[in-house]
Length: 280
Image 1 (cartoon, rainbow, N blue to C red):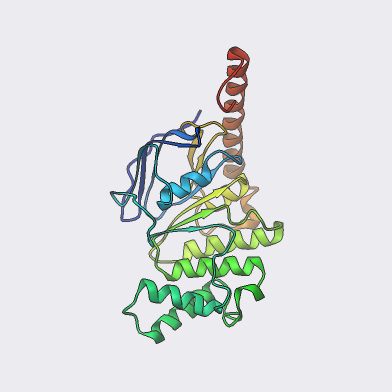
Image 2: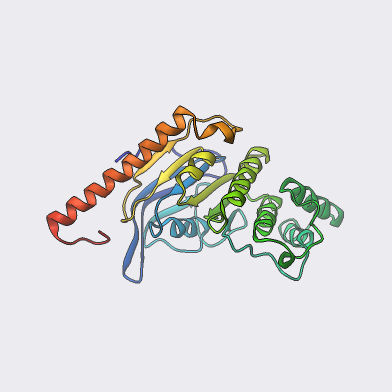
């Protein structure tokens, strides 16, 4: 195990999770989980399918209630969904009857009702341009590829000034080349947006986590404390062409994989000793 104690979050967009337990239909999905996410961090929640990444994001978004323990944001308990904490999945959620630009304008007007109409439209176009969508702002979502719709969803979230983006493995449905382009976009948006957003991305791809994150929190297949909680000591912006061959990248990859192998050996040993076990 390489679970690390971390300092309290700072700033206005930090999360604190303490002694978290979540039970659904009699099954324990998360247990004994404690973590901190500081304002402006890019954190990847890494782990296999079914390890609780999506549930944790829904708890951070206020869409679920802990069975035990607490989840707080900016020093206050998370109680219900809020525009400050936007949850994004691979299904875009854009309104199909509106153009991309009008989707952003509607969201901006709802978040900033006092903003003049001309300013709302300019803001929408600026964020579409940042996401590489300046030429398709007049298109409707169903006229666009799934990758372009995801770009539009990210642009809308940024245009709302949400200090937190919670991303539930939105890139998992894309083939390799599109996925790589969208990873580059996420990195660009994170580096370019000021003030810097807090991003928490769930992924099953260790290379994606290492390429994007400031920090990786690894969850295991059985409910319990994080298996790993490690910083990614690679400066930004990152050069993707050389990143994967960098010694620190390879060393961190081995460290994380070794932690999961150790966790698996412990589970198998427990199964052999007891002959049974929840989630083993």
